[in-house]
Amino acid sequence: MIKTLLKSVREYKRPSLLTPLFVFFEVVLECLIPMVIAELVETYEKSQSVTDILKYGAIVVALALLSLTFGAVAGVTCATASTGFAKNLRHDMYYAVQDYSFENIDRFSTSSLVTRLTTDVAHVQMSYMMIIRTAIRSPFMFIFAIVMAFLMGGKMAWIFICVIPILGGVLFAVARMAMPLFKKVFKKYDNLNASVQENIKGMRVVKSFVREDYEKKKFGFASEDVARDFTRADRILALNGPVMQLCLNIVMVFVLSFGSYTTVSTVEGSLGIGQMSALLTYGFMILSSLMMLSMIFVTITISLESMRRISEVLNEKSTLTSPENPVTEVADGSIEFENVTFKYSSTAHKNALSDINLSIKSGETVGIIGGTGSSKSTLIQLIPRLYDATEGVVRVGGIDVRDYDLEVLRDNVAVVLQKNVLFSGTIKQNLRWGNKDATDEELREACHLACADEFIDSFPDGYDTYIEQGGTNVSGGQKQRLCIARALLKKPKILILDDSTSAVDTHTDAKIRAAMREYIPETTKIIIAQRIASVEEADRTIVLDGGKIVAVGTHEELLATCDIYRETYTTQTKGGED
Figure: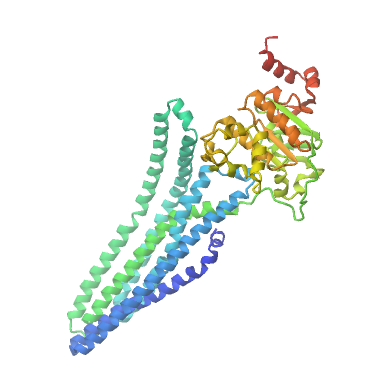
């Protein structure tokens, strides 16, 4: 886990290494100050020389200024390193997610990925900042202060050593109790984010069913659940402070009592006032460094679960990769399924597709009809290799899809979904997802073929009209037509329309299909539809039921031979009266 995370330090190695170095010098100088002050006190007691006082005073000021300078520089390098590390973590996680296959994405919820990219990274950033500065400063301070305490106070310094096992035992017990709670709370964080995301995404449905109060209560319960677990964990972690303070007070009482006695006694080898002052200062340094270590311990305890969750994302390897020597050109749009069986996971009890054997010629228009759950969308997802077939072979252009370079294959297959996605930006920017170099004339032509120019021209800003996130300022039918235009701009070898004209009227649907026949005659067109009218003119139509092909043929052939097709057609055209 640590190795995985440290890979994201990269260009911030230099400030990460310089910070402990500057902290080291800061601590050394800070630990020398009490010793110099002790010498100042001893000198004043003996000679009361103004020159000596000024000399030692100047040394103290110089040491303090140098320590302050090193501390300030360490703060700058620490901030640079920690924020840069967090930036690289977010970058690496985001890029890792972009390479995921659908199978990988299925293992993480959207809300969980958002939490990992934001809250978890913030926790790790805080820990990293403390590790390279405070976690270095505290041990250095502890060691130097212990050494100086023995030099200045002799055997009395053993009291500081005695409290260390007590504090260590408390920290270990606290960690053991707190860690399971943090593991639980981060999962609940994911659920909380999922609730927010679901509510915002479905705001129109919530309002139309007047479910605002229900959603508020649901969010309130989830929020209280997170707060309750965090409170339990924080109560345990809060034990660190009082225990540390108790040890500090006990040690200080001992040092003050016994030290004062030895200072005023006339016993040979007794402490001087300067030594007593230095010992008290070093004692405070020792115990304050231990308190800092406890704070670091708490922070790292909280962030350990975040580190694990981030490492999961970074270590997740895509289940779909390009071969070592991939094919980099798709010859044509021919498609072949040979004995294909598919299920979404190895633990699934039922196949989504079974015994699929199908051959589609390049340039052919093929319709796919079937009821809900018949695996129509699953079938077409195997073509651009969004999933790999569990058994059998899928070929495009006569070559197994697993032999292609993934980017090349997917660049030659355009898919338009029923639930299309538009991104925030202008209409032009959204259309150029299909072809980033498309001219304005090509944009207009594609929109004309998709019947999108009808509404674009009615907008005051035309093609420069801004699309809100998710395309919320255009209708479902408009969104579908824009996405069809975007796919046409790719000029793919294979075009798949997955019920992508469901929100379009039948007249416009017919115009779009006619335009595609003329504009891209050599492109293989696969049309998944619920309406028979959308596939009636297809060269062939495939009827799916229960993940199996039950019939293939033209419109007339299926009417004569396939009960499912005939029943669907009769229901849609005559209302099922006959």
